[in-house]
Length: 300
Image (cartoon, rainbow, N blue to C red; front, side):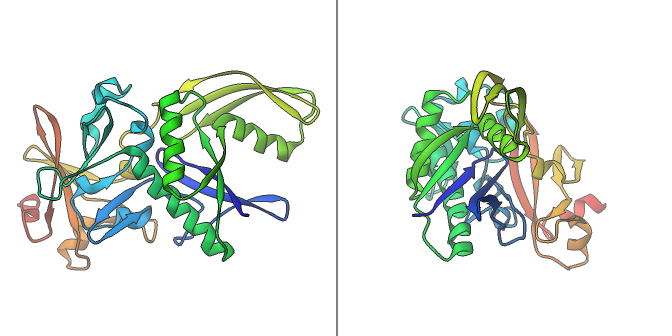
């Protein structure tokens, strides 16, 4: 039996194993120990991580922030409900579930629960480990925010099940950080303050170590603190023109170098979609255009 440890993050996720008595983070195909927590529906494929960010599909079919949505029954109950217009995907409440609406308004419209998206990310991490070990993974320990509510925990357990994994343990993220730090520093008879500042949540814990035992004394935090939109979108350069916000550049997720997508397209080097958001009374509406469509208006 092979068990793995997973940090299912809001913006990034990673997976590790114990190898020769030490934790080892598994590197993904792009050479990095983390993957963006993104799932893109690019017919006929479903792409997870960096490939999803590079997918030529409607931006509303690129899904993220499942950790913010998971376990909530109604959208208006979300702690960050007022900033929902920053999302580039469509959301709705159906059958007492807050979730995503894929291909909204088309014959292919489909409602997806957040745990279904989280399960895709978990499957990708599982596959990365199986490729590394050349053996099947059976179970996982998954870290969750310390202040996750019961319905969020239940939905996360469901995501693990959907990913084809046996859940061995749900471990609170600050406890995970404390265990890892104590394993490295070998504290004895100490009290420590742990900050777990993730991409979308913040947990702060006070733990007491006596011998080899670690006991958490207090926990607090914010389950909605972090970049929104996620940091992998914040690096994009933008232009505001004719009531539209254009995403024109940022990181090339294959080379991880800054690039100017606008100039590249004008030079005919790459074929890509550019995304813009139309300002209106209902917030931001996401749309897209190709290089030879309306792009020239920015140069007039």
